[in-house]
Length: 65
Image 1 (cartoon, rainbow, N blue to C red):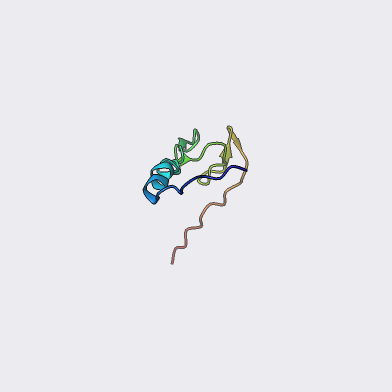
Image 2 (cartoon, rainbow, N blue to C red):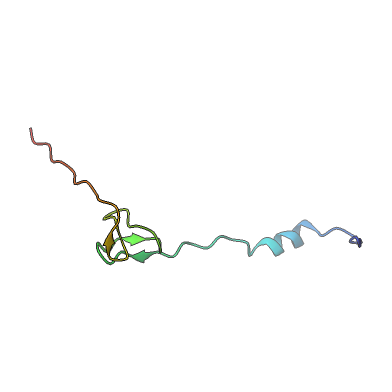
């Protein structure tokens, strides 16, 4: 198998790897509560996905003294 004649410098390697950055996730808004969510996921705020309630959310109880 062929071998390289000389090794690449660190600068050349870093130049090649400079485009390996991770992309920022694209957020969309929930059509039910208008909170930012990741696409194709159940909304963590209201529990809706694709216009249907998937996860029933418990409402917080107000403790009055």
